[in-house]
Image (cartoon, rainbow, N blue to C red):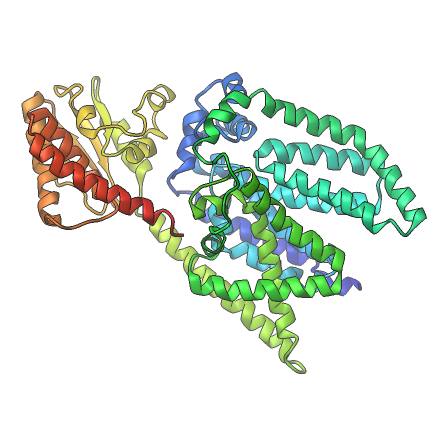
Length: 533
């Protein structure tokens, strides 16, 4: 392949800078959401605890140790805590360009790099203080190192491959699927070299040199997880079953990558065209690509993985850059069907259309993020509170999102899932309480409040239990009346669960039953909604 068929380092570098700028702009004032709050919670724990336990959000132990070190050195700002993910997501741009060249598809490398730079799903996880972007970058780097070792199976290349394999495994437990893929590649190379005695001998000699560092380093990584086996077994019950699980989540998981069904179908078609093009050009590479997706999907099924489709998509995030590469190759291949000079025009128009469409979705996601300004609510609370004041989240999620910015002793002492808003508010009704709420159906509590985007921060004065019950009741009943007796919504439980708790305090069993019924219906609706992308 001639040099001009591959994207230049200048092009890849420029696209990586573009990706970096996009991610910095998105991340610099984006409040901590979801699992990021778990990161902010766990960095308050000692390093020894982080490395010897496996619990909710404590599932990427070494990454959390790294985040704890970054927080100690540079503070807990948005960019500092997301720096590893931002840099990893930007590095993916270069990695896909180089990997496309190794596949013999370097002429499409700039398309793949452009797609990765602006693709919304990859941006989302590149601005998250979790290990997913790092895991994806390490995985693609491991593929490149394997190809390098295969061309030159030296001691140095073998040591580099071994070290990166162990690091990938330690970055996230799902790195086991990448390590298994490497093992399958080792086995296939034995088959592919069977008819060439000289090449087979060279390959076996390389395996001999590789085996010691590879087994030692990856064995050490495996032993690390072995010492966590008791908590791993306990935690496994929250996301896995004891039997082989279905693959019926795949269509919705793929849709999650591309945000909507229409876009997903378009890129699914391009992916198939790209897969065929790679397989026709280099059958061995085509099989490698196919197994890159098949090994984690089948492995997760055999391991009993069972979760919402959007969660399964996240588990397989290291496959996503390869999917984007295949889509890029598919578009470039399809454009070649146009005669004469039309090909370059079609390629450029297609890439521009994808950039515009994804850019539009990126802007929408950014605007949506601006609605939830939990960090401003936390800042206001910290500035206004006095001795004895309390902070309470209207729900556990809201409580967690604000506590991410509080001092460590207050982060770790907050309520846990299943918290009762009413019970938390009644613990010390003589003290002033700051309540944060973010919902389509925010109660209109009759107290002073400030608003940050769609975040409401209510200030309940002290005054004893009777006064507080009246204030809570008036706020909840106002929103319940606006919903009506038959209205059903996914977050209605946030209204009727506290009303049921108030009825219990008053000993009104009839209202407890009435409100509890609506809570159950709401939770059932919410559970069904979580199965959609």
